[in-house]
Image (cartoon, rainbow, N blue to C red):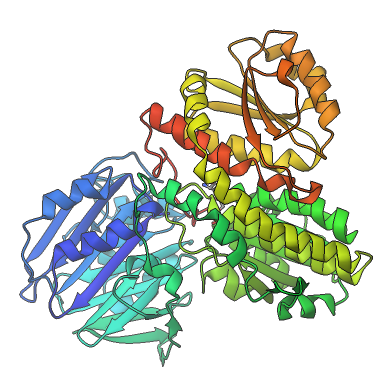
Length: 605
Ligand code: M6R
C-alpha cells in the first residue's frame, strides 16, 4: 500500500521517477506526486489525483537536471483523495520534503503538540506531521535529526527525506514498511519493492528496520545505531523481468492465462514427473519433524486457498488443520504448541497482518513455514522454512494465477505428509499424474470462452448473487464470489446449499440469481435437490457443473467444467469464474486491473 521510489543520480529526470511510480501503481492509485532538486537547490514539485498517468502528462516536458528525486503513489489512509493530501509533503519552512509508506499511529497527538508550537497544517495526512516534526526537531544535521524523530513515531514507516539546503543528500529510514535499494556506478535508487526497478537492475538489497541509508553523490552508506553496516546483494529473479501485458487487454486476463503454467511451475524441482514421486528436500525435512497438526494464517484469496488445503490435509494426511484470518490471529489468544507447524501464506510476502502474526509465533519459539510468491519478501525472510510458489510477477490487484500456484504447493504438502502416514504410494502417483493433466485441461478452458461472454451479458444486469457450494467446494465458491465483488462491485454471498433452508431462502427471488457449484464427487445429488428448492421459487440459476452431469431441468444458464478426481475439483471452476468476473467488469466499464479503493499489497494494518 503506497509505493515510493527515489533516486540520487548523476544524470536524471523527473519522468524517470514517474516510470518507477508507474511500475508501483498497483500499491495504490488514489494520487501521485514527485519532487526533484537540482544541484543548485532549484526544486520541482508536482502532484495529481488518481492515476499515475495523470501525473505523467503534467511532468512530460520536464528537463533532466534533478540530482535527487522522491516520488509517491498513494493509497489514501489519512484524508481524502486530494492534491493537498498527496505526497511529497513538506515542512512549514519548505525546507524538508518527504514521502512515506505506512501509518503513524500517534500522529494526532504529535500534530496537536506541533500546533501548540505554531505549526500550521495544510493536509489531513500523518506524513505531514513527520515533515513538521523534522523541522521542529532539526539540529546540526539531518541524520541526527531523523534518528531522534523516528523515536517519537509509533510505526510503521518507510520515509525518504530531502533537505533543500543540502541537495546532494537523500536520506531514507524504515520500520515495519519495506524499502529496497539498488546501486549503479553513477546512481542509487530506493523503492518500496523490486518491481519499480525490474527493468533496470539485476541485484538489490533490502533495508532492515531502524537502519538509516544516506545517499550522497550516488554513493551510499547504511547506518544502524551509528555503526556503518554492509548489506548482502540479492539476485533479481527472472520472474520479475516481464511486467508486460502482451496481447491481453488487462494484466488480470494475462495473469489468468498464465495459470496452467503456474500450476506446473510450482511443482518443478519438487516432483519427479517421470516417476511421479515427491523430491522436495524442504518437504522431506518437514516430514522428519514431529509435527502433529497444522495452523494456517493468511488473508484474502490466500486465506481461501488455505481453507481448501485444510480439507486436503485432513483427507490425504489425516492431520488436523486450523485456518485463521491473519488480522484476527493477531488479537486472539495465542496458545503455542511445539508440535504444530504454523504456516503463513501470502502472494506478496509483505501483508502487514501476516508479517505481524509471524512475529507472535516466532517469539514463542514455534515452528514457522512460509508459502509466498515474491522472492526475498519479508515473510519469507522471517520464517524457519518455506517454499516459493514461483508464479511469476502478479501485478494487479486481483490475485489469480498465484492462487493456482498456492493450491499446487499446498496439495503437494498434503501428499507429502500423507505419504509419511497412511496414503498409499499409488494414490500419490495417481494424483501427481492428474495434476499434470489438469494443466492441459485448464488450457482448454482458456480457449473456450465464448459461452462465458454470453453468460456475462445476462448476469451483468443483476446486482446480487448467491454462490452455493458443498463440502470441498467451500473455498472455491468463496474465492469466485470474492473475484466477482472485487472486480465488478456487485454484491455476492456464499452459502452451503443445505444451509439455504435455515434462512437465506428468505432473500431468494427471480432478481437474485444463484450461482450453484455442482461438481462430480462433491455431494452432487444432494446439491441438485437443494437447487430444485431454489428453482421452485423461480430463481435464476447459473449452474457450474461437471461436463456430463445432466441436470438440464435445474438451470437457466450453464458453465461446464472438466471432470477430475474429487481431490482436484476445487481447481476447475476458477478459470471460467474469474473470466466471467472480468467480462462482467468490462461490460460495466470497471477498471479490471485497478478495482476501486484497493491496492495489491496490504502493508499497513
Ligand atoms: O499478498 P497476500 O496474498 O498476502 O494478499 C492477501 C490479500 O490481500 C489478497 O489475496 C487480496 O484479497 C486480493 N485482492 C484478492 O484477489
